[in-house]
Length: 287
Image (tube, rainbow, N blue to C red; front, side):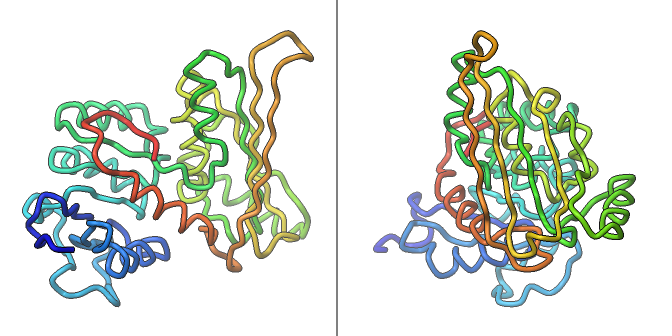
């Protein structure tokens, strides 16, 4: 591009987290970003560990120095606690793409982040991830036509990262050797038990605020017969007379490495979301 890096047309993007998704996004920004007007501003990790492949000048060790980086968009792909602890400060200085929207299952966190986005004039972005039909769900919700929404996620047992009693149930499922329903019920109580696995479900709650985290129904299934993919089923029910309401069901098989939390197609979806985060002037936006 003809403009230098200080040109207003450049958009500087910071990455929080350097797991598989963070590494992918950082590499994309370094290789494909410049022709698109995007620059990698920094990469930060919670652990302070090594950042292989990231130039030393782009390694941010102290998140308190974020305000001095000139960053325009901060992309979190680490853990919900990052948004809970630092989200308000980030939104005071930049747009914020929340890769772990399960953080919003905590009502106080959601309220604080929404308020910070309004005060700072920056956008809080929630990526669609693996949620197929997200825009249709949002439109149905806005029109008052959405009655129910259920998301079922099926993975091999080793692809789950669970907490508390749900982890104990997973251990029992592994011992059984068969297909086991780990959880079925409202989304909100599931989010803190599976913060790394149900972000796509959290995006559904954002897309359908009339249902929200209490109304969206979630189902987690451990199935050893699907070792190389993540299966997501979305069931949408419209309002109408019993037996005559609109019903739409989609089924998505996302190829994934054995034991991977994130499927291969999710990486491309996140990159598309980053490209869509061009500044919307405040509030919560799906991307």
